[in-house]
Image (cartoon, rainbow, N blue to C red; front, side, top):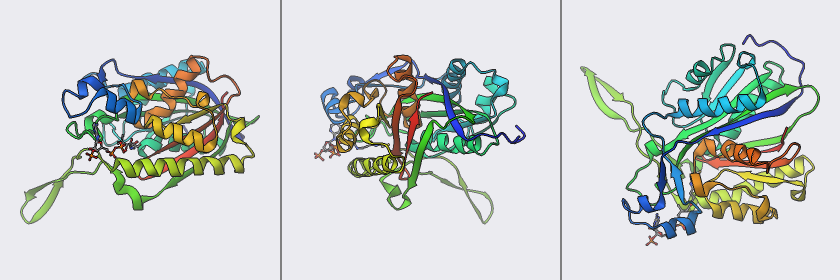
Length: 335
Ligand code: COA
């Protein structure tokens, strides 16, 4: 893509797609490994089972499948795609997995890159891609959220291993001069509280050349202070959404759907209560998939669009939150 200037002002949402691996890991099965129970996990989180990527799956493969379905819904010629942004914290290639998705799609005219912001990653990627489109540089973009956190979970830590699963989701967005269906957005980070949830590098010391220390790269497993992350989410998510509503002259009564990052049903309910959004407008599928990190929001949206719950012109309030700490929100009109 050569950065041709289009005269565009806004974003249209043209398609959605998602993919989850076949393998199902139930609460029951986890309780055979660590001291927990189906009843405890369900009552504290709302999660019943999650999907685990098998040997054939990785972020690139899952992201490709989600992207392809979104492109089919948009009915685009693949050669017309200008930009592919992949939100992931678990790339199968640390140099970036987006170009391999570009190659699998045959999207030869697109530029593709990864973006990492943990569970806020999809929203950050959507907002990033939208700026290229609104600025007039690119016309068509695929935004993907894909993660394989199962590879980085400490399966002996019952406080965190119950939460996470693998999957991917994608949206196809297009620049338009007629309207802007990305009505508003906000993004925040607070590195001071970063230690509440992280996946630190784990370096092994080596000495390849005499008197020169080397660190060979690798990663430890997810470290989480669940209570602090919970408090952060139920405090910050309503605040960022309320501010977004006010800035864009929306009241919570005008919201058709609340699509939050699928971390914990209790967080979803608490945020909905704070915003006075009734339960039937709060979309949830975490009972089946757990927390798939950057994938949860597009995975949830795709499911609701295909089930004919989210319809053309519906107003969606969405928020992602997680490690960083990072959080973000967007107001979307579907279509
Ligand atoms: N099974 C059974 N008991 C468990 C357990 C499990 N899987 N995990 C923790 N416990 C125990 C604890 O050891 C503790 O026991 P103790 O009082 O004897 O020490 C007790 O349950 C309560 O632990 P606590 O951490 O206070 O539980 P909680 O109600 O806060 O629930 C989480 C834990 C992880 C479910 C909850 O904190 C949470 O969801 N936090 C947000 C995490 C999140 O969303 N992270 C991703 C953000 S993107």
